[in-house]
Image (cartoon, rainbow, N blue to C red; front, side, top):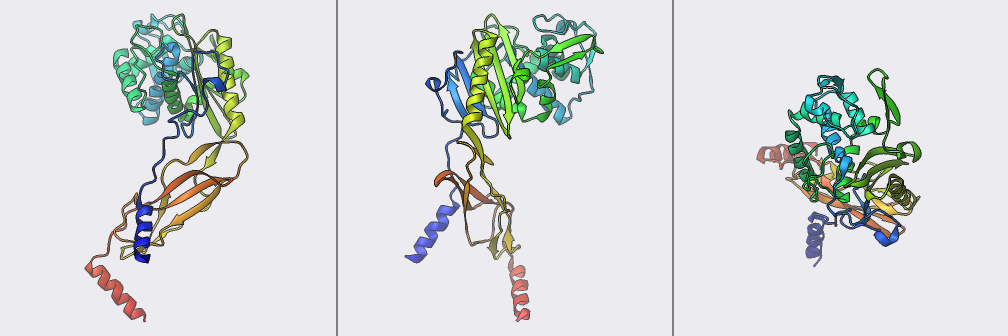
Length: 383
């Protein structure tokens, strides 16, 4: 019986730990928070935890909030080395023809990628968005193909783009509050974008053309890091607002608000709820993980690493987590990186927050015949 029990425990430890994705269901619904807009979302950035939702998957025209995806592709191209902030972009006649929010590019006018990105982030410049799309992909159409591919990669199931600016609503250009939160979360993972989205006042063309951020929360809301406004008569007032305090960052998305004041008020309400009621809990101990002994392996032990997420969003603030580590005493070679060798239980006030799998961080091969012979010989000579 003791042998069977031991085998059962080892088998259980080797099983992967399954958990429901953190963002699967929102903690708060429409009745819990007074939001005037017909569709809205509050998501925490680090975990992707969906805190609040209201008609979050309704497909709506987003207007210039579209440019969150446009900026994401620009930033990814910069960080991959495909483009540089210092590169020169030449505006085409087509880009210069765009109206709405713009900086009135002239055909043939040259501007750096940095200034183009600044104009898109701060004043939602349609002409600069098209100029950058053409610069990076050769045409806006090819750039839009990339937008839709990236949306699919991010799991944006309620989105389809037909242009890079959000200026036109042709009935086939849509997204949802939840999808806006997904692409906004991906964008703010790139710290460089905040150098642009947090600008309140600036200028281009050697100071001749002044810029003022369309997102008034950048100036009014403490900790605001961006991100993008949108308005047309079809979309009404849309906003993806991001803010960070004490290491926690939230994304508040408001779709089709009745006025700019209403959408700003809704976004502030959502952000306030997040900062007041929740905090991040580390799912990793401060001290380093020990190693596990390996029997009959080319190495005597194997290093460990954490599986899963590094943090969980929890209700309440100022709570101290408790950690209980359970590891196998030893494991027989061969060991493969990713093998489950234990688990870490994270609790607050006796309630389990998460059970984190502890994994082998590397391969450890089994000793061959000659290796076993040499090790045996070494043991005999050591006697």
